[in-house]
Image: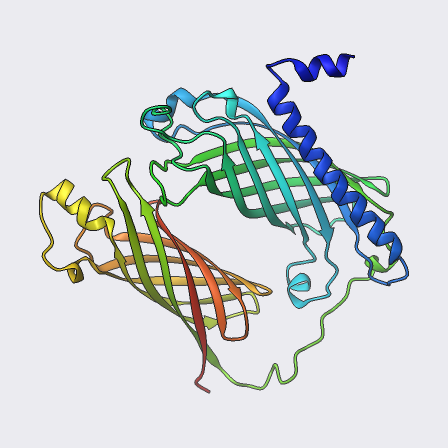
Length: 396
C-alpha cells in the first residue's frame, strides 16, 4: 500500500517509474549474463561481471550569464555493468588491465521546468592508476549518447538557451577510489564530471557541464575466478622488432551540417578533409603535425550579419589550417587531439586558434571511420563524420 501511494504521487511518479524501468533492464541483463556464465563455467576464462551503482550530488556550471536561472544543486544516479580485463589482448596489458563496461546515468537537473531531465547511455573504460590490492585509484572515461527531455523552442521554451536538440553527445569522467569489502563487494567514492552537447549541430548549444561528488557500491555477480589472479601477457607479433622505421599518414574526408534556424536561419553543410603525419613513439602514442581544409556554409551568413559584406565566390570561404597532433591508441580505437592555427580564413569571428578532438575506429589495417569535433577556445563549432585511409611510410 505504501509503495502504491508513493508511486501515485505526482511529484515522484515520472522519475520513480523511469528509475524502476532502468533497474528492471539492468536486472534482465544481469540475469542473462549470469545464466550464460553458469552454462559456460567450464571455460577457463569465463566472463567476470560486476554490477555497480553510483549516487552523485552536483550542480550545473552557469558559464554564460543567461544560464544563471539554472544554478542549483541536485542529485544524479547511475547503474552500470563492468567487466574485468586480464590481458587477452595487448592493449589490456599496456593499460594495466582496466575495467570496461556500459552505464546508464540519470538526473532531473534540479527539477528545472526549462531543462527537464537528462539521460545518458555510454560505454566506458576505467583505468587503474595505482597497483594496491584492496584499495585502488581509478580514472574512468566514457563517451555515449545523451537525451534531454526538453530543448529550446522559440515560443514554448525560449528560456532554454542551453540545448537546442533532444539527442546529444554525453561525456562522463570519474576519478574514484575503490575499496574491496570481502570477496564480492566494492565500495567507492569519487569526483565526477558530465557534459552534454550536440556540437552545434543545432543551436543554441551552450552545453551542460555538471561537476559532482559520488559514492558507489559494486557487487561481483560470482566469486572471483582463480585463474584471473594470473594475469596474461600478450604474445609478441611476428617480425615486430625488425629494425624498420616509419611514419603514419592518415587522410580523412568528412561531412556534417548545422541547424542554425534559431540564430541566422536555415541549415548549412560542412565539408572538410584533413591529414595527420604521425610518428609512433611508444605502443600507445604518436606525435606529429596535421593539415586541415574545410568549408563551413554558415560562414557566408555570419560574414553578412557581422561585417555586412557579401562573398562573390564560395572558394573564398575555404579555411586552411596547420596544427600539432597527438594520437592515443587503445586496441582498434584511437583518440586524436589537434591544436592549430588558421593559415587562411575569411571569417575572423572565431579567432585564429582552433582545437580538434577525433575518435577513430579501425576497420582494417588501413581503413578507418571517424567522428571529429572542432572547437574554438573550448566552444564547439561543428561535428563531422568521416572515413579515412592510413598510409604506413617506411623511411628506414
